Structures are given as C-alpha cells and as structure tokens.
Length: 98
Image 1 (tube, helix red, strand yellow):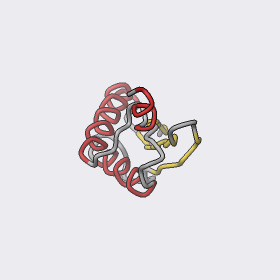
Image 2 (cartoon, helix red, strand yellow):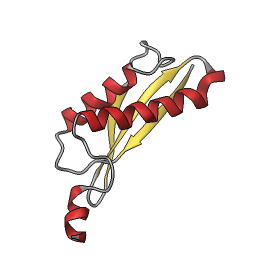
Image 3 (cartoon, helix red, strand yellow):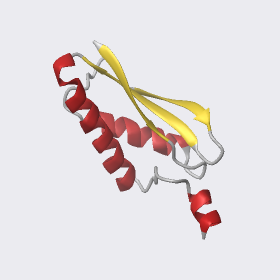
Image 4 (cartoon, helix red, strand yellow):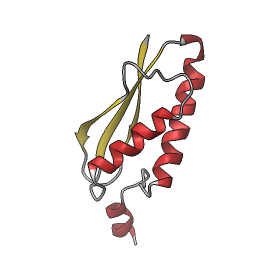
C-alpha cells in the first residue's frame, strides 16, 4: 500500500470545508483509491494569495500508480469546477491584473 497526494491552491475566498468536501468527493470517484484507510485533506501552507490543500489517498495496485495519479488529478479538476472552486490563479491576482 502506498499513499499518494494531489495539491491544489484555491484562493482564500473559499470556505475550507467546501474545498475539503470537493477533494474527498473527487477521491471517491477514482477507481483504485482504497476506501480504507480513508482519504483525507490537510491544509499544508498559506501562500500569499492562496491556501494549499493536499488530498491524500491510498492505493494498493502499484502497477497502476501513474494511471491512478492521472485519474485523481483529472477528477480533482472536474469536481472543483463542478463546485465552483477555481484552482487556477487566485481571484485576487486576476483582479490586480485587470
């Protein structure tokens, strides 16, 4: 069994509970991510304009590791979009640019 992670950095304007819920929802959609031990999310860093979240998941099929990693990232991207969470350049930076 190995632990993998996916990092996203949405802006401070998003409620942490909403981001964490979306990330865990994304993990549930990935075939190959184990149900036990459960996936979890940690806030690991405050950046200038964003919060760094790490989604941690566990896998047992090491042969599929690159495929599962790619699917995890794709699901995180899709699920964040569905929940209206922008994980690109934080909103504040976009406003400063305009």
